[in-house]
Image (tube, rainbow, N blue to C red):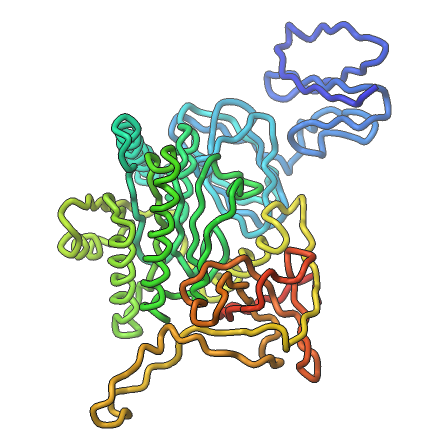
Length: 498
């Protein structure tokens, strides 16, 4: 007989059950509810949602009522539970309805939490949660300002929904919204939430991430886009029913090569327009664009902020956005209101207190985590194992894009500076390539590398002594589909390759 398990929540009056010879019923009680686990034959493990500590290999034990490592939280309407994870733990919705970043939690299912994770559980109707307290620092937010942010996000979604419904009715282009602001103000969280809300309403928005510092669609140093058909999966990330469109910028700051950034963004917008025009459901759903942030300090004389504003202007023009959401920065909102066309709606939003300022070390760890997720998968419970492949140096070419501009004072009289920002420069194979992240370009010729999308990414784990070969870490067991690689500024040491 096939093994099956049933998990039911019943009232105390419904506890009477008819037992048959081939079924075993066990039950435990939590709060005012009984949970029944039904599985075939004694000795078969019961599989239930929730804390694995609630079950034994040969049956079910009682819920540990006085377990000090488990804490219960009751949230009222519109309240939020903020958590930060220090060791592997779990969070379970016991009753009511709640969500994280626009993704609904399933009642009775334990959300696995891992060190370094931060998040906020939001409820619109009230709920009860249990948390493994030993590995999680959690608290209920009492600030009225933070609770108002929930209403702000929902109102933004409601306005976008009206625009999408109008676009569906008129068969016109859906809303295109760009989220911008300084570093660490919650731009990615807002984009993820809005995209999940749209997917829950059966729309298919394209989420465009031009945040080259910490891209959530692909990995750092990239400009990427993907059509969202399902809400964000808290364990698996975005559902990749179709491959994302990815360009490798190669740097973590648009200011490193603003001209290249502009060219790649314009090319991405052109391809998205073509894709949208061939699918009416995507066309009417619009785009949600996540912008790179810029530093708050003026240690560079304001150059970073000035180039950051140029990058926003470039992106807004390329995608022809109609709504621009500015988080926290009043100066930026005022400046853009004067700089952008009058038909662009600019809305200034408050910053959530959950958005923290990262140190340089924290930025590095976050980027490493994104590369690790690319190679090993988003879900820590189902780790993937990349392959080590040795390539001959003579069969592959590695390039970087752009070179330092020569100051006018050093040029011969009457000479003009060439456009060095898009020149592909070949890089020789050396020990310096060890642990460097490379993009596998789709270009057929070196001059096409700057504007060509990429197939994927590999990491150099070793270079032979005579430099005739190098070993890469690749998600695929086969050699790369192209022999043109693009060098990025990311160094990544894979724990499994040490």
